[in-house]
Image (cartoon, rainbow, N blue to C red; front, side):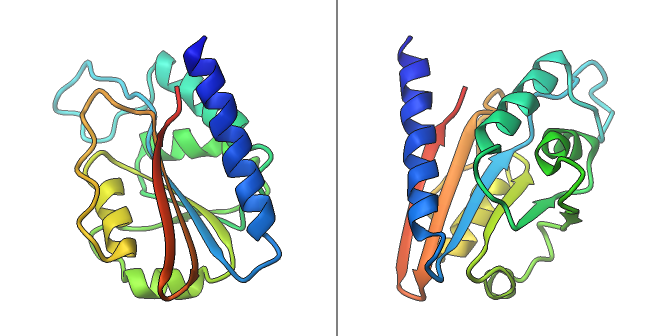
Length: 168
């Protein structure tokens, strides 16, 4: 029951917050790790989502359904693309990025005034978030945690709002 109330509050807060800044020139960035992956073959470097992951991908879709996204970024792996495919709804192209060669200042400039979603991995999403904030704030995500939602709002060079939420 508590998780439902917290999820509802979180959805309401983020949705209201992003709606209130929509007309401003702020940049809103949502960052999530891919949903649960198949773990049967330890040598498989590009596994698909498992059943629980497909359910979580649909939960992410429900979470983002009332948030107008201008861009979606994903790494080029089955698990990240399968997490974000329901959200893209075939009307928003998924842009592939490499988290190890991205220019974060250019990313912010390219997406200035937009609302974007970034999907990555347990070791790349916290790093991505930290690089955008220019601060070592978030640690790598535990391997069994696929429910983190990082939110950054940038209204000017010095005005950053950021938060970490757990969405189950």
